[in-house]
Image (cartoon, rainbow, N blue to C red; front, side, top):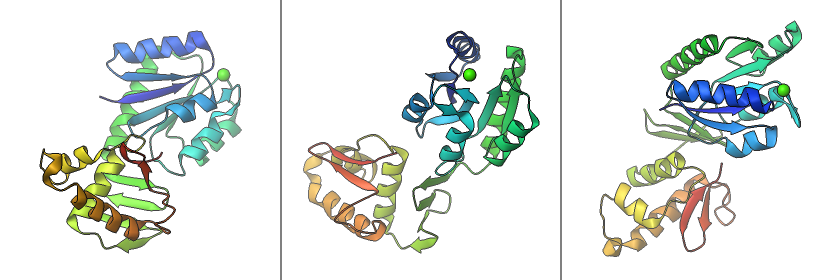
Length: 223
Ligand code: CA
């Protein structure tokens, strides 16, 4: 299912957008400001619908920030139909643009089209800060340099990336990377592989920026 984040400060219009999209079978997350939008944005988000005029800034700024780490498609909404806004929206990474007011049926068509196009793009490329993980080719680059990872190290990194923002426990790692269910098998094996992975991907393994220990719970890649 496609997860859509709606960033619109007009509560009634936000509600109307959400209801329309939910009825059409999308899962929807609501945000009314840039701060909320940033908080709600995660790896599950498959489309952003962003109003340009927001109480704490412009949707354009949000899009520009998002584009530093993500290629998630963005549809802008605006009451203004100025040419400058539109050009800037596309310059800063917009995929589509709708001028209010518009019929909800038209919005749905735009959403379908943008999602279809983004599905055709390579969705198997994860970018995380300076790391780029190519799931198709099972390759990892940091700052453009190819890293040599073993199969287990790669699988562990992929698991953490797919769950970015959440805690991945050692039990999950054993189940999903080592394909075993019992923790007693070798928790130390996980530690050894994790440490080797950190040495390869972290610029300074003593102060990790990618893989962080969540004390007593597991590990996480923060968004
Ligand atoms: Ca607004």
